[in-house]
Length: 198
Length: 420
Image 1: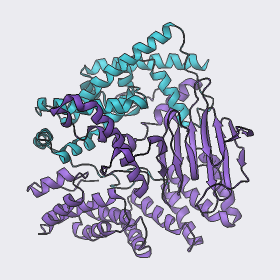
Image 2: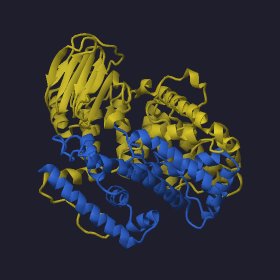
Image 3: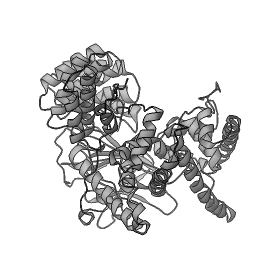
Image 4: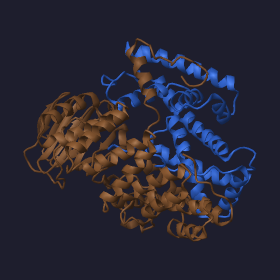
């Protein structure tokens, strides 16, 4: 039978939730170069960091480098973690900042391409109804038209199903700003999708 | 839409572009790339290594990146497509390039992997795929592999190798089967061309619904009956209709078809009660069938997912009795232990965790979980063996997924078994 990770009860056992004090202790052990503590921190946070990077449209070739960079930045900044926020929030904020920085560089390159008229409108693939990979590619083409901030807000909200309050915390902005970004991203995508299909 | 909007955005949009966008959003996040997890871990596993000498960081990561490749190979060679545990360190010089690492599945496994250039591959049981990279095409070595390939940039061909043939695609869903009978290709959508690998001579051009097979034998080790070419993950409705006809017609394919109907009902139609009934019908009709263990296992899984825990436990116990040599023994025992533990029966769970930990052939993730929960249950019961169990865990999985929690356990902190 087709098995998906986590489809059985306990197939991917969730890590025990750490208290704030335990998170601080984990950080201290990481700083003391405890390999198992660092592995535990990585395992607890990798999946969401990876999704965050993908949400911003980093391609596969670059995703490893950014993932690496994020965790090295996390380690370098661990000394400044005071336990005032949850470790997950703190790490995801760092990851968001790094991924947005990268996405902005990439967007600048794309803007240059657009300027010279070399980029095509996203075309709706003929087999979109049955080909998931084609749909993903189409979605990525559409999302590439959005600013990193709008893209992040839309992906976290529409695909990941995260509450706007959490997105606001990750982005370091107000909840209303997140709503504005989501609505504007939707309007922009709707327009492009209609034009592409025409 | 999640959040405080009540309507789902674009749900009733008439434009195909908007409908495609909604569907793409509903597809959800792409599968976690377990290989990326391993690759990146190998690059960051010693972040302090650069602290003493920043100048050595570049070369150090180059070597670490190569080690990541080795980690994946080791995981694949021994356990199939979901490597979880830590990576052994071996000399980088002995490592093959990433494009040549075989992705494999066991006798009862399916796996889905992301490939270069936006493609995705779904491996059926006993299959092997060399994934390739941006410049090297993937190659199906044996078994059945379904591909989803997005449209490629103008002038770029997407090519898959199978035996002595190249399958050339532009943007499509298709499946390749390699076995003793040769190479077979069936197309769900788009257009595929088949050509000779050596000469490039065009042999066939296939549209949706069309199939092609070679007469020449190809390397193969699979003895399982040839399954119809409709891949449930790619075209469930068509596959289901075909399986229904095959199951009703009887003959050697009927058993496989009936089993696969249950898979589609569970995974694509999300109708677990119906899938359960189909698998029960399957084992009633084929009590000594080749897929009987698979049907039994699927029934345990379905019952567990339906939260019919009592029946799931009965089935799990029966499975463990009936198949003492099964490679899924640790997995079933661990699930049975989890079912009892979540009901508060730590004492009952211990027996199953013992079975899982002692299983000769097992996925390291299952043993890791079982060993941890065994220690946690012993601690909950106030059993004096808890410390020894925790130390055993750390000896076996020094960098395991529960290592930190076990260390807390040893330090005297209370470790509650995670609720499901």
